[in-house]
Image (cartoon, rainbow, N blue to C red; front, top):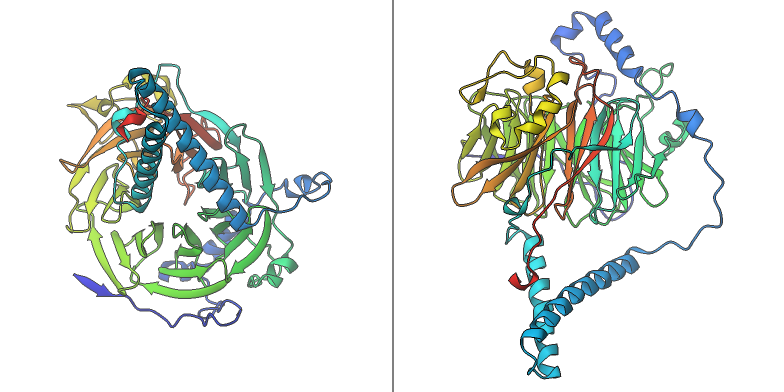
Length: 522
């Protein structure tokens, strides 16, 4: 059944306008009925959240003196450069295939060989375009090799407090991470060299259209819950407890805009692929659409009856969201409609698109679900998704079981209900290698698990487990499928109800070994 999406008129695109505020900012978001009866206790909790701000910002703020500024590459120049590099890589593959075929057939003339090479380049480009548009799926799961006993996650970037979000640039060369202490880091995937985004002063934030704190005597919270990077790599968006969406320039690491309007913490962000459209989800139960290029608010979407936890978007104007109202919703923005999906017996926690019509979700009871937009119920459910017996390389799991709260205990091939606390079996993050059949899930029970999405049977098959200690609050796949990033913390992303002292706060990376693909299959 389709439900109409209540929308407000978008801003005029004719000129630049300040983002519009929505409602009375004097009503604190966290004052639910229960908390209004114990106002004093709510204030204490707010103080606790505010205390998570970083203490080392001033120490890191000095920075080094920069030399003469180099000419900045324009967006058009970058697109041309990337296209030429991609074409050269494809030509190199085509030349390699041509050399192999030349050894087998020396009688072909030069023109015929060049014609075959050009045809091969065209086939590769066509396949890449089909994969990017979602009309073809890359079959990576069958190429993943079993990890060696010594393979493990390596700490790439260290944070002082639990990492809440990880994002990866389109070319897989740069990564971004944020933590509860307000630190936002920009780092190189190859060598881990990092640079910090420095929060501007309160006066600068206000000049960038941020709303001043309700209580002038208290500092603005810099606790970050979500990150998103645009497809062209120019913009980084962050959101958190201060109820704003902050826009950063990735080339200069400078703050350029603060979008206000949400009445609750901004819990999730996503850019629509290939565009500057940015969607934000909040604890105030609304979704807002922004234009990062024009710096304007575009639209509002209403429907969720509780806090929104996760959001995802591909190239089409379709959104996938999960909320604490126990629903997952597929929003068809142009049609102004939404499809509502309900998990059978659990509360959904996270979600992501597999393609435009299929998606994956994780639940607080430890299960993962495969969905199709053609059915209201999951097409496949894996219960106790992080039970050790599900994976063929359980020997890796032995290395981290001593760091788990209650050890390892299975019965009849599944994890006993009393083995883990609900917080540690909670599937807190899911990710899919874009346009492929390879997925990953994370919890706090000591592993990240890889899954194969089987198209024929509409099933989910466990592949391998990669050991890592702590809450896996965020996952990001390389577009190539060659590595996986995990945002790890001693505490869960949206709370402090559990603690894993053995965990190391930071971003961990695990290489994924793939069987080499024969270029001639193109």
